[in-house]
Every structure is written in structure tokens, then in C-alpha cells.
Length: 306
Image 1 (cartoon, one colour):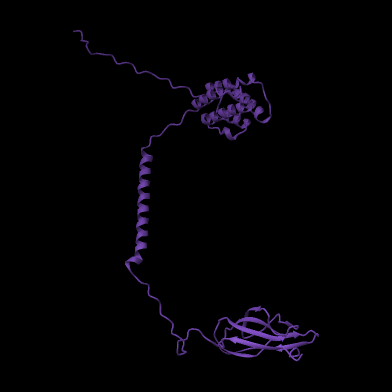
Image 2: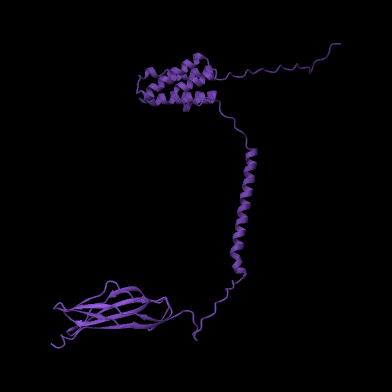
């Protein structure tokens, strides 16, 4: 029974007693108490001039009817000289509800500066380090410069070859707008879209073919215009009113199918390609008139009459 009445006590261990400034060191606090007692470690521990970096509770160790409860604290200091590590209190409560406040030991710790030699004097500042110089040091730089020079030479030669090819390349004249229109209308007529029931696609193709023709022939940006704008452009270009009326018929019929969901019968669609071909006929440039040079009179084998 006497052992159970033994009061709790606390032991403080600091390792090592001499540290370097900024080094983390271990502070071990152990409370010896009865097995039934509870140890309440403080939530906030102030250890100035030391700084608390970490705190962890260790597993309690039983020793007969006594228990050792320990906490490991990691502390450091950023001041030099002999510093005092202050005490802090720990509460131990027995089974009867009686509480005992234990206080840790006050410790004196020597904090030394780093950078001292074996005699305790501060080491001199080292001079600047010399950069070793050798051919092997320069070799990567020389290789890089050689690579850049080779790349620049290759780009220069390629530019010269491209310039020569641009000068010597023959200029291919653009195809005539009416030639393209004739070919496109013939291809559409032979495509069989109407026979397949693709009435809408057929009307879209006719409209696009004639708009491309108007752009190439008169310079009117018909692909980006409404039908009314295309007709105004044709009038501005000097197209005859009869041809403008036929253009209106072709484009408006196509618009009805494209936008108004109008679906004419197949026989009623077959005259669109001939109408487009006739419009190209009446608005295309006139073919140049070839004039044959007069044949030179042959005088060989003829003799002048005396």
C-alpha cells in the first residue's frame, strides 16, 4: 500500500547539453505516477528563448504498480551563449480526483555558432573558387556554335534555291470562268442526283455553280451575297436586263428549294442546268476573231517576161 501512495515525480533530460545554433535537439520529459493516475500534458508550452519545433507523446511504460509517461520535445535556439530552458508544469490527477502540479527542471544549455575551427576561432571566409579552364570545358560551346553556323548556312542556301525556283517557275494562267461553269454544269447533269431523289442537293449545286461563275466573270462576290445583292452586282457590271431576269429565275428557284422547303417534281427541275448553260452563253466574253495572215505570193520558178 505504501508504493501506491508514493507521489508522482518528473524527470527532464536534454541531449546534448552543448548545441550549435539552429540545430534541432531532443528534450525528454518523463512522469512517474501510479497506474490509476492520469497525466495532462499542457496544450501550449512556452520555452523562450528556445523554439518548440515538435512534440509527441510516447507509449506509457509499466513498472510494477507505477507507470512512466513520457513526452519527446524537439527544440532549437537561434541565440548564442548560455541560454536557460525554462520549466513548464504538468498536471497529474489521481483516482480520488486530487490533482498534483509537477514542474520540469530549469536547464542551462550552451549554444555555439557554426563555422568555428578546432581552436574555437571563427574560420576565415573562403576566397572565390577558380573555374577550371580546359579545352574540354569549351568543347560543348564550340560544338554548339558550329551547329548554329551549319543551320544558318542551310537556311540561307534553301532561301536562295527557293528564290531561284520562284523566278524560274512558269506562271499558269487562271482557267476561264465560263470553261469552269460549262464543266461543272455538265458534271451535275451527269451526276444522277435527280434520279436519286436528291432534289435539294441538285438545286444547291446549280446555285453554287452560277454564283462561282458570276464571281469569276464579273468580280461580284456572289458566294457571300443574297440573291438580291447578286442581281444588283450584275446590273452594276452592265449585264443586260434580260440576262439579269434569267439569273433571278434560276437563283430564286434554287432559294425556294434550299430555304423554303419547296420540293418540285423531277421533270420540273431538269431545265435548270440548260438555263444556267444559256446564261453562260449570253454573258461569257466573246471569242477573239482569228484573222489569217495573207499568203505571200510565190515567185520561185517564175521568170519575168521580157
